[in-house]
Length: 125
Image (cartoon, rainbow, N blue to C red; front, side, top):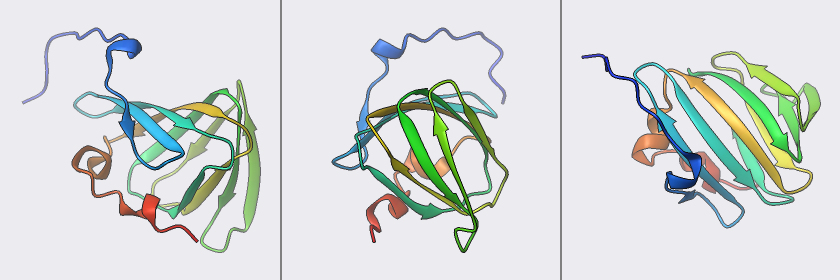
């Protein structure tokens, strides 16, 4: 059943989850959406992966270099104040060019992030 009450969150009160030695995140989920603060240290790598969730990435500070497509056929650097939209099932990977805070929005929520099955983070090249 869908939630019918408004909920208020303060990021400083949300528990930070360590994903790797160089990546951590905070998650807030609704019924059909998820928002995450993702903290990446310089040179942190998010290995290539894809998911059925549509994604919007908004860089608050720092910069991420993205490789997009199964064969890394498109590259883009997304810097503070910029947004990248990733459609469902589009392979992508990223590397932090400096210490970075990004806000990711997903529809629907990333079940693999919620249940800890996002093992691609640990498949480093």
